[in-house]
Image 1 (cartoon, rainbow, N blue to C red):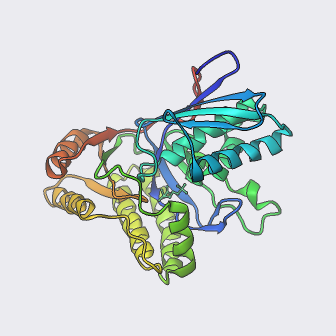
Image 2: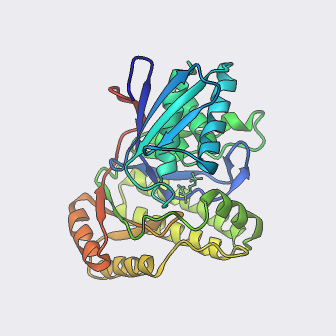
Length: 332
Ligand code: PMV
């Protein structure tokens, strides 16, 4: 589609090492706790936004006109941008992902980070990164983190702040873990059984394990930040794995239970334990889907990928630290 008035932005997914699971404000997408992630250098989303004279937004995702919930989410995000920009103009949005959407592969993070940057630019809103991360957050919480490259912390913000919306944004973190890789095992790329938004709401409302998980996650954040600063990859891996599995146990405590892990996911998780028993530093993390991501050093990544491909007979993609959202042809 690119043409003279088209703004194009690219953003990459991020994988949380300390997870975001639970909102304290649904409308403003304010999380219950801070979270921390690594932006990847694989699976980018490219989004074009063009203002049009039409009376309706046109939204095309992966070559197909978006329908239902997906179209509604993108259009309400554009409504927010229009409100801030005091504009009534509709837009044509065309977005292309490089992984299947809705499979727990963080496509909503890369998707809304790219859309936030392209739409903010097209409508003339400020694109200063902190502002952009606050805007992207409204599309999908984890998108706040994909505005930045490398390691990123998303501050939950203070409920007592005069404007809580302003206090919740992401920013980059410096880390001495310069050689961390992540092997994504694509166990199943079909759509997840329940959207993360609904699963999160149900967990907060019904899981008796949620308050404990929240307390643990706050503690994990302190230890994770220290480990990243010291370049202690073993502690980073151990905390990331425990935090992710704790999140899944907390979901399983919801009524009715939320279960994203499949027997194939569990086989990969067991193999990661076996790798560790054999002296390879490898730790698993998993999001709202069955796909397992394995943290390890860059030097071990190929060996880990080969083992997990053999076991699962599924693709395993090696990712490293990637860049923040950028306008086409520019770097952030
Ligand atoms: O941004 P959402 O609403 O898709 O939620 C993402 C939640 C997890 O991916 C499971 C965890 C995280 O911190 O990214």
